Amino acid sequence: MGSTRTAGGTARGTARAGNGTWRNWGGNVSARPARQTAPASVGELAAVLRRAAEDGLPVKAVGTGHSFTSIAATDGVLIRPGLLTGIRGIDREAMTVTVAAGTPLRRLNVALAREGLSLTNMGDIMEQTVSGAVSTGTHGTGRTSASLAAQIRGLELVTADGTVLTCSATENADVFAAARIGLGALGVVTAITFAVEPLFLLTAREEPMPWERVLSDFDELWAENEHFEFYWFPHTDGTSTKRNNRSAGPERPVGPVRAWLEDEFLSNGVFQAANWVGRAAPGTVPALARLSSRALSARTYTDIPYKVFTSPRRVRFVEMEYAVPREAVVATLRELRAVIERSRLRISFPVEVRTAPADDITLSTASGRDSAYIAVHMFRGTPYQAYFTAAERVFAAHEGRPHWGKVHTRDAEYLAGVYPRFGEFTALRDRLDPDRRFRNDHLRRILGS
Image 1 (cartoon, rainbow, N blue to C red):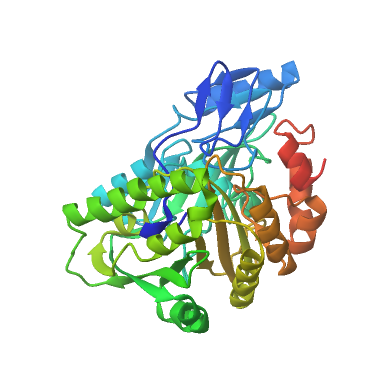
Image 2 (cartoon, rainbow, N blue to C red):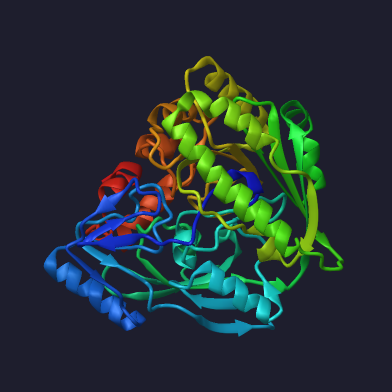
């Protein structure tokens, strides 16, 4: 989810395990691993991988379970990175921070701010581990600043045979190109070095805007703002827009009372109640959507980056997101709306739209092309297949690339057609993991056997 108030969204909860069963945050994926382990060092992790090989078991590392796909599911060895946390070091000359892979983004952001530093861009969720977030291509929105993975300057990777690789643009460069978004298919990431910059201020301007105005002015809104995103409420002509731009200050955060009222009470509490009603009585959804689209007034505030980019998200959902060429986003959205309006679908969650510049990561959803992201959601426990199937047809018609951590049905044949460097990734996988130690059914579908 993005950072506009009206979307509901991600809570602080992590993936849950009970009676040996692992479940993801969205509740749509579960697995029963043969064993679970939490190594406390890179050496211990390497030993876990070697023992798994001796036992003939597949291995998957899992963070907080915020992916909606089964990318981390396994019936073999499940590695939890909870003991591989903390900042290893800050290099103020190089302006980088090296952090252990299991560190939650929340801890990283708070620690960096305390040091007068910040990441350049981020998504709106801070609950994922850094390795889980980058491995699936987590992103925010930006005209010139890209995903979390694009901010990586180095990483440490333990491969299937227990070898520890240090990777950067100058060391193991071919691995670095791919492993920044490695899908858990190349090895286990144990540390990441991010580029950072001096702490800065962002001014956020949030306001409602009619659907036709957003679409007709989209190129202008994108070009004039460092970070632009919006939500459209199906069954309405209303959107909620957010423009984030750097500011000289002064710092003017949202007041505590207004923050509670709008970000907690309305965007989480009332929004969840509306979704409960809509799930029980789908016929009420259009009216509830109209109320949601009018619920919040415009506001402007200035704060440090993670307090502007990120938001409290407590309403659970299931999500699909595709990246389409940026120049195709308006046409894609118009087609999506037409599909919804011709159908009997009742959609209680808004559609989210963000952008990213082209990057050079092998399987990044923005690899080699300026991209726009369109995300569709359904409230947890509500049937989502019909909606997602209809949306996916629209996205695929525009050479859409599915977010690696969100629901989709694409396979290796399709993905090889929309990723020019797909073969480069699979060849590297053959070299680093010839015995498919990191296999599971999901990777078999999206990467081939």
